[in-house]
Length: 428
Image (cartoon, rainbow, N blue to C red; front, side, top):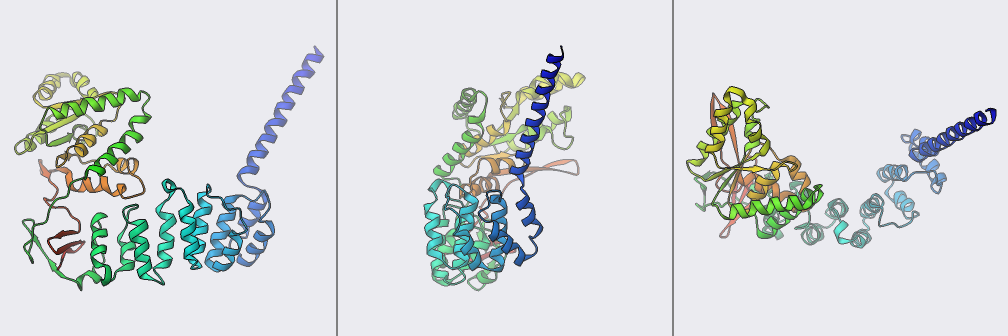
């Protein structure tokens, strides 16, 4: 009995020791003594550099601390930062290291080395943050070369902002600048440069008050539609527990829409939950009110999750009215285990020049089915051009249609029309 008790105690002690050792190893991996020592000197530059260089090859020094210190050195001494980072092993798989190396090359105006490093990154793994730092440093010394880099390696690969483009404002490539602004749906905030190129105008009944040209509304191109649909499938459908079920549901939707001529797709769930954030009889009444507003000039289709049909019986004395409303309206019921948003977004982007009604800003979808490239503007642009909003004002629902022309840089004939936050500029 004593032997058994002793054996149990030994086992317990062994487990305790192993747990302590594992805990220490885990703690050591997260932050070591040398990491702590360096962090304590992070605001003392000279002693920080001395301590860092002394321990640079210390295996207990974490990469995060190495990169943090190098970033501190960059601000104070870019040449020293170059000396330090070139002592580290070249590792394309470490994106933090690659970004830092490109940044240091660029700041030291070693542009060819920075670009060469960028091109060593596999094409599918290149990000805007790698190339834009080269562009930002190059533009300080050579705007023409910076423009060529922007045009050849950033344009049509990544989103370009006003801040990016205004750095190379130049009369020599003004047409290309306007086209880049148009493709990236840039609405100009600082119009100082552009005001000297044209005149401020009004858009009246879709026409420019200066040249009388009519602005147009842009639709998604075939490639843009396919990219968004592919991203939606990858991000949502391929991650379903039953992917085949999801794909079949989307095919069923495509087949249904081919047999009809709907031109407005309504996010019914968004309307059901509007204001009260719960579904009651007023939710179904609101559904019919907004549908009636829309059907006067359109052929709308409502998308509603099946549970809202199944739960009408919970409305008690109002259940008959709820069922009557549902039976009067054209509704596509979305299945369980799938997000109803996918259906009206899929319908909208798949059918050019159709509209979607929702007050949802769709931010999650913009983030999830977009890449860090030109596609990340595509869904936002579609939302700006083809999403209808609704409001309740003094007890009356009002429908807010998007403008009949796209709020983007447009070239009509030989004349450019530039949208700014203060109005439009006509450049001929």
